[in-house]
Length: 363
Image (cartoon, rainbow, N blue to C red):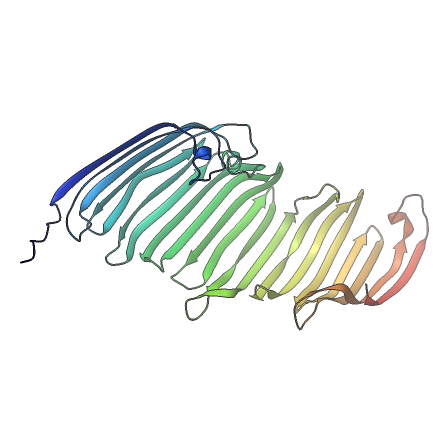
């Protein structure tokens, strides 16, 4: 006859592992680009039986005083404490905390694998100094403080997500970006809804919302995602990303982007915006659109002091059939300057010029 089945607590077990002065960079299977040493303590206890998960608990602690990431000479202390327990096929993650310098990541949740359900799950990350995260990961130049929260529940393979990101005094390569706030939700395989996106600093404001569709009707990852975004700028100060082009701009206007990612359509309405370049203040207004590789400028007006230039036209930058970028775009444009004061261009020049220019052909 068959042997009797084991009960869910037919046997018990305990496993203790401890390690000191472990060097991740020298462990080939890890292939981590980090220098430094770490200590490890792992304990697993539980009860089990035939064909069952049984019950148990795992506690692990990892600590390192001197993590060194690629391209940095500044060590960052770190630690990881994790607790996980299970009863049958229900697993609960509790008191799990990763710390690196002044940054922390906390994870908690409860998953029923038998029902294939995430009952609840949360990831909460805080960084008092984004530089302590960027340096060990080989991304120098980050600055500011940030908090990110991800809440999750629902079917294991198609969960509902709610993501919130907040950052203060955000900076990249010492260029300030101010405060960032973003929130997005997604239900199962539905579209990602960006319900709030805000970047602001000293009266400068950039906001937006929209949707991104990553999966097709069959639940497969879309090869060409669809997006629908709306962005608004209010006295938004464009960051100066390249010192070779010292243009300072405060932008007012709206832009919409829609369609497939590989070939989207876009529309821009630029209200009166301020540009400062080469010691001169310029006001700019524009209405433009992008469709199937064609840029259409319905109206562009640049004015400085008593001078003004207006332009309109089109430029075909991509082949409408195959989407390839053209080496010689085809341009049709008109430029009008009914009263261009030469003193506005250079203080040593006097006079007024009226001009009309028409451009046509490849450039």
